[in-house]
Image 1 (cartoon, rainbow, N blue to C red):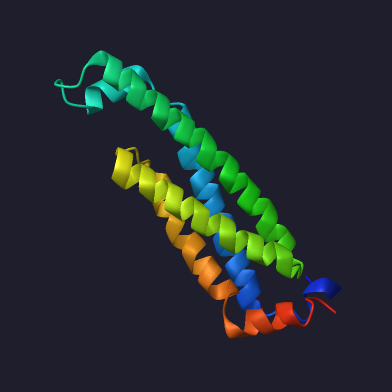
Image 2 (tube, rainbow, N blue to C red; image 1 turned 60 degrees about the vertical axis):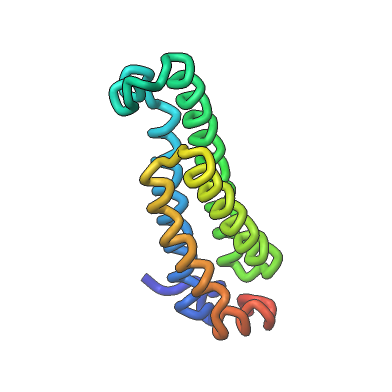
Length: 149
């Protein structure tokens, strides 16, 4: 397969960062959808008997809402990453901001409230590596030049 003209001068690190962001977003969407589909019986059996049924329902509501939120945020991240891969520096900065916002919110939910979906936490790793690669010198220079020529 021959490379498209838009990708002929794109640094390899930008492609790797893109695929890491897409992989992280996919894992996060899967984790969010799993959180949305959590049942009361599964939550009741996983939590100690000292927790009341009302508290289990409240926990499950927060768990489901956070699942919807991370799934939507991951879908937006995938869109922004695609636009950033084309060479638009504005979308690259938006990807950085969104990844760090997701990181803060997910960690606050996990540590502060105790609501954490393991796949969502796992998805943060490829996202952070992708952002680190996209912030590297060769990627930064490519975006500063205006992207594809």
